[in-house]
Image 1 (cartoon, rainbow over the protein chains, first blue to last red):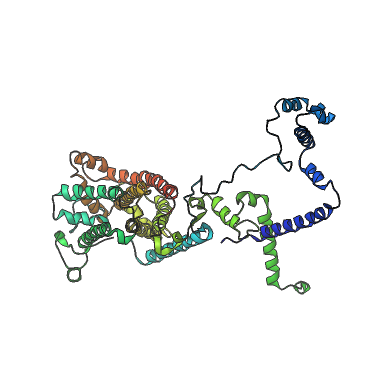
Image 2 (image 1 turned 135 degrees about the horizontal axis):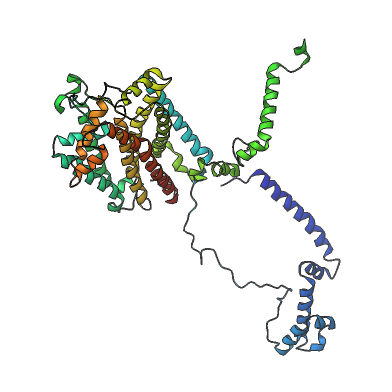
Length: 261
Length: 262
């Protein structure tokens, strides 16, 4: 439940008190004056409409006798009066209590409109989400600052076309691809496999038509993705840490690291 | 003594003066024209649902967000902040990258010397270059992990299919941004890593050699390659990435906020 703001609650209370105070004298005055309901109605309905409806009522009571209508009313709305006289079956403009509207039907909510949206449990972005984001940004900044303070980015000697380092390695995120180069023809390793991989990744939502998001309903999709991610991670790690001079297989704890970030 | 005439202690006086200045500033027309209603910098911010909404609606940066989010969406254990970290590292990279641009000329004769000078002679030069490098690696990692998180939550399912496609594109742009930046220091690491990488591109079927030629600005890596990759790195790729990020964030909202709960 949402809490009602303090100032709104106060305003509603004041209005209620005021309404109670004004209705009391009216009730006490009602039995005193015979004309009270009429005068009350007169205060709400414009005078000329009231006059017209009274004229119409008088006419229908009189069974279509024109002379029964007050002269003033006839003078004011002569056209209407004659029309009513000509067709007495025409619907009277008023209801029993002098009402000008009538209730046709009650439409229950949900019988015409079908509201499908269910209220969601939501919180204000400020402060709930922004605080989390701010703290997260602070942590990342702090981590980067401290890490950068202690660990320097590599800067080797000036680029030299005549001196190929051994091994020559791609950036770490391409080392999985470079590892594939040891197994396949360069076109397969460098273009076909990553191309198909990316294509399938893009198409993933169109291939996986299972609507459920629950892990227990998507065992196949999750295992397939996990196998692929692991396969990729293992290739990258082998390329990064287990490849030495000549891109030959080495053990990093025995032969040292051949890896630059 | 003059000080003894004042009954208030000095700290209270300072406090009084400060609050007076604050009141004057926050009551001024300039202040209230800069900070829109509901801003926490405005005078008299009170914590009400209306003002909480105003904070988001009246800030150009915050209004990337909706006014309200699903309760589970603010749980760190759901998103692990990975998308946010990716975006934040992009911002860090932009800021530190602009700093680096002041000291760098993309020619084979000057690039390495400029980096060396930056590290040894420029105040905070080494620190900023380190931050740029580590933030770049962090961004590759966080974008990758973000993708994995989205997959495991099944968040790419209808109606979010297309945003997943945009996301995979952003992953590729991230890799390209990182890879183009790799060449710029013009040291042995840069040259040979890029040699390995671009040799692979040469094996693209049919037009492999043409792709390689366009990317290198010649048949071999040289000063033209450096200029080409510099422009790609500091202008073209960030520009395209920002456009895709804008679509990505916009689609998150249009597709009904973040996914879940599971």
